[in-house]
Length: 360
Image 1 (cartoon, rainbow, N blue to C red):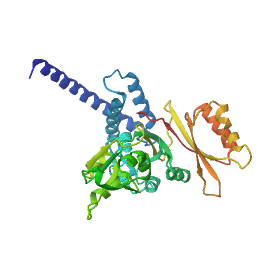
Image 2 (image 1 turned 90 degrees about the vertical axis):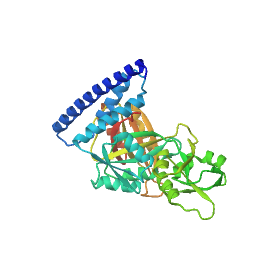
Image 3 (image 1 turned 135 degrees about the vertical axis):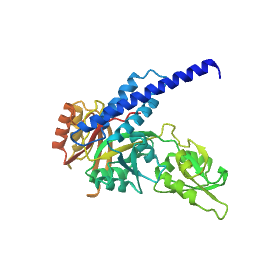
Image 4 (image 1 turned 120 degrees about the vertical axis):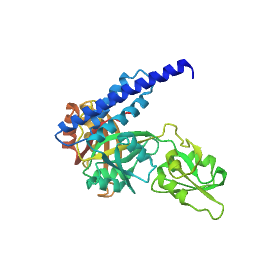
């Protein structure tokens, strides 16, 4: 070993000792803060978002901002676990993108509850069987998850945070030869996100939707082929590891920027972080120009609308509810004024939550 290499390693060892000491000092302070909290709420997404943004602004490299976020999310997760190990529900089985989103937001310092459906995630959080739930709400190419929106309308839960996750699909199978694939299973959104690739690469393979990508991978793992034909699943690389499948192709999504947005659901309101989003659902009165009149207060008070999605209300034929995301926190003066006026003009308005904008 060269003397220069030895010196560098010695320096790294010394820095590691300093980092260990400082992380433990941070953990002691976090535990002390926990004893001072009066409401018993352990997870403070607004505070964690502020910490991550401040560190990214101070980051001089060579680590990327995403790497810095990953490191400090792990630190915060383990410090939080000294107060309480949070329980998190998400759509399973293990290996779903919902699990990845839960890991990204809460780290390893939490207990996982794997649910069989999005409905079950809502129910377990509502029944206080877990602390929080993580559910998908929209994809950058395929749009909103209608079931999640419908459940938000009916549920008493609050949106406490959001997670954005780049989605990179793989084609997984027991088979090693992609030309022998005759059937492809996955979630309906994933099949749509990989439509062009599938049409070009294995055009004769049938496609069938299942409840989740990881469930498709689990099915392929358990499948016994008796006639020489083989099936594949569209899922994550983690699912390939979990279910011992071959990765026949990677990054098969049609859009390289394919991203899914997830919501964190809980029972409590979230304080302002300084860079927030508010989600609401409302209906307009049945009269000409009602929709324009309903949204006019947003423009009047300088509140930017970032999303507008309509869904059948299921209360009557051709009756719709409107899901809206706006910039700012519901306690911000201009947002509060705009929402008060919208409330007066709407036949129904419900604030689903104010929460920090996702940090990469």
